[in-house]
Amino acid sequence: MELIDGNKIAAEIIAELKTQVAALPGRPPCLALVRVGEDPASVSYVKKKELASATIGITSRLIFPPVTITQDGLFALIDGLNADPAVDGILVQSPLPKHINETAVFRRIAAHKDVDGFHTLNLGKLAQEDETGFVACTPAGIMQLLQRSGVAVSGKHVVVLGRSLIVGKPAALLALQRRPWANATVTVCHSQTASLPALTRQADILIAAIGKAEFVTADMVKPGAVVIDVGVNRVADSTKKSGYRLTGDVHFPTVAPLCSKITPVPGGVGPMTVAMLMQNTVKARRQNA
Image (cartoon, rainbow, N blue to C red; front, side, top):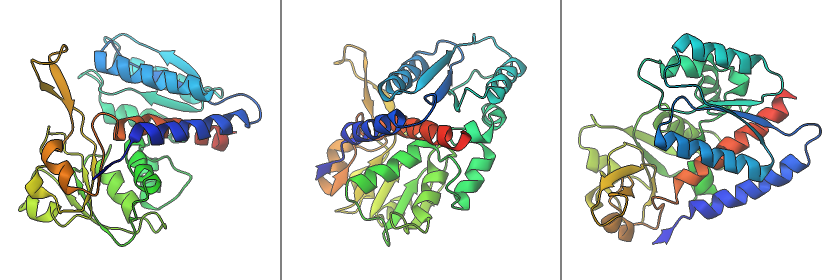
């Protein structure tokens, strides 16, 4: 069993992007980071994105409206960023307060500045294999992990456990693409799938993104499979100072010994999501020039 080191691979990509940004003519790329309210997890995620931007040479524009902002107020803020030629990428950190429709917010961001890859136009471009679009950061990071870890995807059976627009659906579309690094046969499973373990056991590559702590157990994994664990869950643990521990969607202690390769949690997919956001921002700067 080999651990796929997301921290190491993300650091390689960050270093590559730093070189690319240094060579860009004119101003550096600019990423607007919008965080509504003071949710502790959101504060942490935005800080990581700000630090990565600074390392690469991307300018961060930090905008922190109060949790009481109305949907129309947030729309007006986004409209201003859409119209600002000095802003290349816009990210609105989720989750948003319950009184704001997240899907409507994602659609409000101009498609050419949608570095999160959630806009309807960018999802359509992904389905059409149009490389001018932006791909959601976590699925893009998964494919980079596989490529840079020497995992051959072409001709393999990829099983995606989860059907969200953030991970599951775009991951399936990426693995299906007619590219040397893709060309997989893909099955998408979810919480309502009948005979789920029988399907996941067929996977040469299993992508677990169902959002349930330690859901994938040893009986669901084929020996020798590559397992990509997307989940980040907090589980109560009185032995930890924080009172909880982080775990993925995979029961790592029993599944890992079966795998040829597996991502840990933390330190697997998470760092790649930030790296792909940075990559999308640099791409936006080039395309919007």
